Image 1 (cartoon, rainbow, N blue to C red):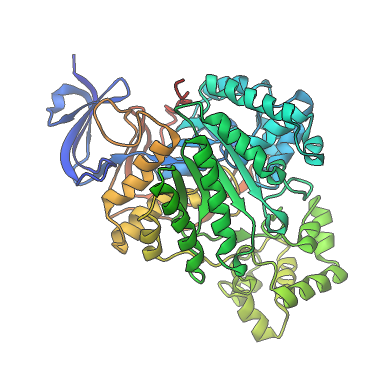
Image 2 (image 1 turned 135 degrees about the vertical axis):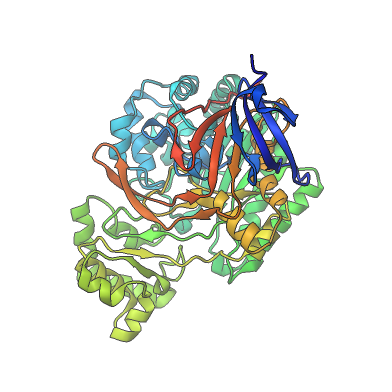
Length: 576
């Protein structure tokens, strides 16, 4: 009988710990790395020839929203396509447990606008047979999945559950007894393997991630003392982490707002005495003082022994904007938010209203708003359906068209969209594409990535971040080494999340591995696919090239980019 189930033979191992690359074979048995050395092919039932390939630990993605999509997409794409083998869910404080039966629809609506997860897909795929967080964990445990999952307790459903509903939770601060009950629920969740809690707090008109009705999310309006109480509740555990996203000031006002936000995250980490990952540090090229100020705060807390960690956005961030869809990233501007609410017919009627159009122009002329996703004059015509329009406008910016045709920017965006049947896609500029800024961020206590996997699927493809980092930043630019990349893709996030047996290549660790050809590694161009239930709704994806095998718990989940349908992922219950 063969000693191993599989041997990965002849590859160059980059083990995730900053150890220099080395050549060796890996013997896999019972889903784990049984031995590292040199073996005969007769010692295994199956041999994977990794000659000339890199063998590295699977990517750990700490910011995902597969809570709903895992019900209809067990592959948990697109992250799994790009080497992600483990994720955390419940991020931003958004999710579906605990939940009263009467609030099931309301919980789905709460994810429709802020994370752009279609209500129709959730309604068709999610059975809502759970109420408590332990029951939710059991449900996730039973689902087939291509990645391992850790679950965080999301603050918005937690507060709403205890306070009697979403609207009640927005009407007043929670009472002391209610907070005590929330802590009890977190304890119940931790007892069955949850790994901490998560929240978003986007304050005032800065928020572009709002509830289905345009109001702020429950987590946005919770006060400092509330979050400090939840952090204190985590302190009694020697496991678990906090995910926290906060924005309290306009970036054009300087770095003080982001520094203040990071400082409060540091206070939470210090109170909990557990790792806190802050979302997100974005290296905007025109304002490097902002991300450098945030990282300076991380350094200050780390020097005091406080485990504050930055989540660094390493992949270029751009978004696709189609005004026929439920576009949410203008929600920090009242006139735009109101226009983009309701049904398709209602949205188009408001966008076509000349009075509202004039208001939009006045706001833009006075403040250059909306600009939450960059200067809209730099939006690019990326996908045009009408052939005559495509010939004139393809790949041109709104600003260029406005100048050429002597039109206002707002008129360009909306007139061309209307002429194309409201199907035209505009692409925002990428404002964080410098490899040297990636190197600078990863020189601090930081995790690479930030995918939002499962969310905003019509607008962005940040799930490609591992392939982008390895190809663009490591191979092409030489900004960081391969060892550094895998440390920040796997080992560091595994430490933050509390994955005890994942994140590096060592004997006894789970066999979560990616085997790839570095020279061939690439991110394909964006494309729309139509696979969302119940009626094949669309989403934007980017596929990878160069991965020979992706393995989860010793089973091949993807081979040459093809889904094997093995779904070897597990719910990882963090030990008490």
